[in-house]
Structure formats: structure tokens, C-alpha cells
Length: 351
Image (cartoon, rainbow, N blue to C red):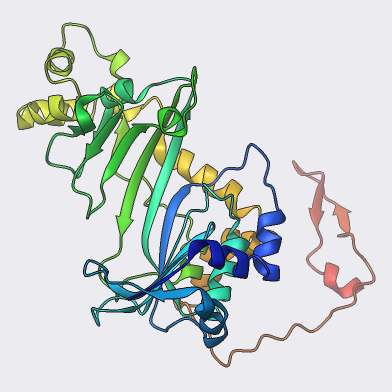
């Protein structure tokens, strides 16, 4: 396989105007992005100008564990191409919009740099996230978090009470962890809830644009931060939480009847934080960094409905003929009765 010297790659790519522009932009401290990591695939190889540009930094290396013949790492993104497995994407691009303060426009620009355009790109994996700042630790959250589709109790990673893993890594795993500890921040309460979504079926994968325009009604679905304060101290679920340490395992230990009763309890119906709404609010703020994409994001559902559910329109032309109106107000006439005024049925005749 071929690797690319990181120092030389940085020196080469940082001369490109697109990279220079992205590196020169410094988003504010309050930059909000709901995605921690994105893996973007394509059925085509990187464009030839990109390959020619980075070739001087390449060197051959023996690596039997690699799934690709070429692997390049830059500060803003990493790229792999020419897979060993013919079923894998021809090109795989990994980037972290939150970490590197990448706007939606910046994501498209990086994909364009590698592939030549973003129309051939699709989403393979995304890490959806919600941050809880200054009000709950990861250990406290584990005593409230319920993940409905996971059938096994969470794992306390290294038994430190800082990182809790719900489910296997390969399929919609949920992580609840101490982000402040990871970032080396002292005296800060910063807990992150992260859900990995991997699209294994290549026939159902969304294109990159479809992904960006999606309002994500499915975000954080079946995940509830239960308001356990609404339970009484002698309730069985509270005793089970104290016994097992997490709400997930305590809930799983109950019989089917008690589970049904808990799901309709006020603690379930009114969680302390609505993860789905919080995610979508962060998504809206992130998309607003790119005005043109934001317009499509806010209107995509309406436009898609007008296309009869089709994502692509071909050979359709819409013409709007200008109409000059001499009157911009709507004439009204007096009306005897409960309504003082009513619209004239013939008000267009005066135009």
C-alpha cells in the first residue's frame, strides 16, 4: 500500500486556496455542530489532479491490516482510495465538522477538492451528538439514559465511571462520556451523548446533499434521558438503579408489565432533556453558517413534496410571467351586519 508523509502532505495541500481559506477561518467559541465525525464514500476514485498533487509525498509501506491501497492524512481530513474489497467505496473521506469547525459549505469544498464534485458522494457513517454542559456528569447521566433498541446493559469502559457504551461498535452504538476529561479541561462539567449511525446497505445510503438537507426527524430516536426525580424513593426502579448502577440495566431487570407501566410514567413522557429536539436545534444553527444551503435545508421538504417524492428533476422548466398591478391594496366595501368590511368579489376588475 501507499502512505503519504504527513509533513509533506500538509506542506503541499496548505498551498491550495481552498485549504488556505478553510484554515484562515476561525469560527467563534460558540460554534455549534451536531456531527462529531462523518465518513463520506464515493463510487469513483479521487480526481486525477488531486492524485497528481499528492503523489510526491507518497511512499510504499507493508500493511496487511489496511483495507485500502492508498491512505492520506491531513489536519482537516483523511482520504483512502483503491479498496482491497470490491464492495467497499472506491474512495472514503473522513472528517470531523465539530472538531475542525467546518461549516456545511466547507464540507462540500473538501469533498470537491478530492473528488472533483460532491454529487458522487454519499454518507457511510455519521456520529450524531448532543452536549450537556454544566448540569450533569456522565455517571449521573448513565442513571437516567434509556436506549430503547439496545438489549444489553451498557459497559462502563475501564470501570472509571466516565464512559458508558451502549451496544456494539458496528451498529448504532451510543456513547455517554466525559468530554471535559477527554479535552483535558478541569473544573468543567461537559458530558457528550453520541450515537453512531452506519449505513451498511449501499442502496439506501443518502447522497451528501440529501444528508445535509435532511431535517433528521430520526435523530436520537428511542433515546430518553428519564427524569428519575419524578419517581418515589421506594419505587422499584429506584432500588434497581442503586443495585445495578445504570438506568438501562435496571429497566431491563423488570418484567414486561412493569416496563409498560414505566414507559407511560411522567418521568418518561417528560424527560429532563429532549435529545431529538436539541440535536435538530444544533443542526439548524450549523446549517445557518451556509446561507444558500440553509435556504434549501429549510425548504427541501416542501420542494421534495412538489416533485411528487422524486429527488431529481429532469427537463422540467418553470416560467413565471410578470404581472403589473396598479393597486397594491385590496379594496373593501362597507357591509351591514356583524362584519364591518368584506372583500369585494370583483376587486381584480380594478387592476
